[in-house]
Length: 167
Image (tube, rainbow, N blue to C red):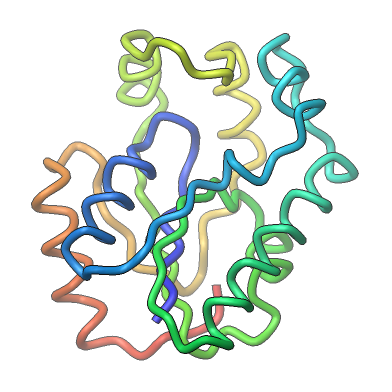
């Protein structure tokens, strides 16, 4: 199974994704590692990415997802995947993929970002992420205000009772 933990920056994707991978005993990859240096520099400067900036990033992630699937490996990815088109680009054949949407309101997320240090994402871009966000039709939807351990337990409980479906 491939899990893609998604949501806006500051929703807890990396924290929850790493804990989920540890619990499952599988690998974890953060979407940030697939961004070009140019994309990182734009975001650090407070410039929102365009779709043209995102396509190569998403294609690189998709290649990693497909490689894991080809090897039959479980893997957890953390990725904003804000729009339906992005989720479809990541998983054109959704079999064996489970999207987990970490949902939170802008004030909760803004508070988290205010305390985060050393990340290239400029918190001024948060509103643009909420503006871009298309909530997924077929995903596990979880409240970001829950502790990470509770969220992982919910993912495992709910994913066991829900077949993977389109993102």
